[in-house]
Structures are given as C-alpha cells and as structure tokens.
Length: 207
Image 1 (cartoon, rainbow, N blue to C red):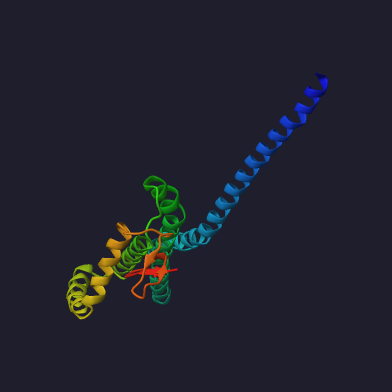
Image 2 (cartoon, one colour):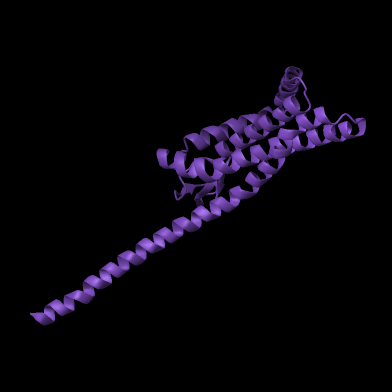
C-alpha cells in the first residue's frame, strides 16, 4: 500500500510541474509579444513628443522675439515641426491600428482575419487626413478649393482608369465576402488544382 502511494507522488508532481511549465511558457510568450508591440510603438511615440513640445511654445516665442531674422526662422521651423507632428501622429495611429486594434479587438470579435485591403484603405485615409491637417493648420490653406480641384481631377482619372477601379471594388467585395478560404483547392482553367494564399487589391493570389 505504501509503495502505491509513493509511486503516485512523482506522477502528481510531474503533472504539476508540466502545468507550471506550460503556464510560464504561455506567460513568457505573451510578455514577449507585448514587448515587440511596445518596441514598434515607441519610435513613433517618441517622434510625436519631439515634434509636439516645440509646437506648444512656438507661438509664445513668436510674441516674445520681435527680430525679423528670428521671426523667419520661427516661421520655417513652425512649418517643419508642424508637418512632422501631423505625419508622426498619423504613423502612430496606423501602428496602433495594425498592432492592437485590428488583431486584438476587431479580429477577436469577428472571429476571422481582417482583410488586408481594408487595413490598407484605412491607412491611406489616415495619411490623407494627416496631409489635409498639414495644409489646413500648418500652411493655413483653405481645403475647399483643394477638395473641388481634387474632385474634378478624380473624375478625369476615374474615367481614364475605370477598369482598374472596377477591379478595385471587386477586390473589396472579394475581401468582405470571399467565396473561398485559404486552404481550399480551386480548379484552374488548365485543369490544374491550386490553393489561394491570400487576396490582393484586385485579385486572389494562388499559393
């Protein structure tokens, strides 16, 4: 009887040790992943702070320093720091979306991977917003004329590349409601079988 009890103890100890090892491994992987995410966010965050601090005091320096030479320097520096501030803010927002919002929030909620097309489209909209902010707040340009001009140019370009635009929206539909998934097999026109490796802007890439 005592020999059975003694033989049971090492088994229980091994189970506990394996569970602890698994927990530590999972925790270490989570910490490593969090550190990688933090490292990718730290550079745009530091740049944002570097360009934000001078922008907060430039108006005060403009009022205190009346020398024309320094006024010109402050004006140029205001344009440089303001532009870099908007661009670094846009970069940080894109990094937060790609590293935190898309994988940790959206994909967990919908239960599948967010299409790359949607990520790229949101990133382009953020960059456009940053450029619009630079023109409006830094260079103090009216956006109404720019929007009107871009609308006319968009019509001309859209008519010239209408087939590309058609493929683009087909790619959006393909990403939102794909008729097949990665891992499926598709019969091609030459009677060969191949599997999709992922969608692009206007097509699906075979793997």
